Image 1 (tube, one colour):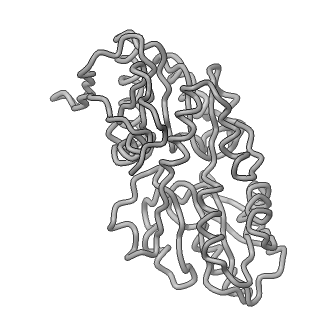
Image 2 (cartoon, rainbow, N blue to C red):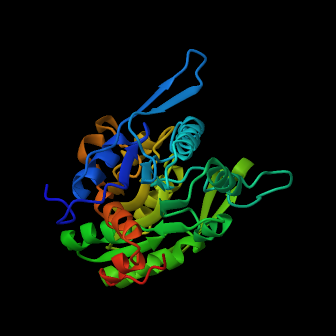
Length: 331
């Protein structure tokens, strides 16, 4: 693989990998034409996390890649301890590359006496010593405002839409799974030049786990739907959406998703014939046993993150990455 840049990256540049997604960090480093820096992360006998940086980082700019995906608490704590170790080793600045930002769904109170955990995580990262945070497709963009340090919010939209553009689907239609995803669906529709339909759902029960679809706005009969969202967890909503679309006369659905959390009964639900393919990215590792013999298609987000990291290090516009792809996405 040819490096992203023609000349040697400055000696004050380091990329470290946490244990949550080392393959992604390695791919980013390869694109940039550098080696991953050396770090040892292991548990103490009492399960506390031990971090040892195995090279001098005094005066350097650090980029540490660590999604806070499952197990969320363990990966988050590892990231915080790693940032603290880097600051105490006299790093000039530490940028936390968090492709999947855990706790992002807890961005507001849904009932009384609840925390706003996404804000707490933002505070923890700042307290640990992070100088900057970079994430992909937050559950809601407003989470950027929880940070008192620079926060680069990237999107996997162009990565995903490029895949569907190459497929050249006939009679495609973009499906917004709820009112909250209409703006994202409009971006898909504009890029792919496809019509848009919106599903209206009502959540009930504890934490809104029970979902009931009450209305579909738009024509889907005889068309191939592309259901879009930010993440799949248990797959319950996606499964019900695909069934409702099939009952409305649509063909088996494609699913376009940034983060494949895939817990609980998700694989069983995604195996249903009403779902043709699930297209996602490697913000979270998706092992072969979760790819359902190719039904779950995993695209690499490493080129996007490599471009963003390089631009941040060279003090250039990150938004330009998306403008170059004809997407107006504020970063």
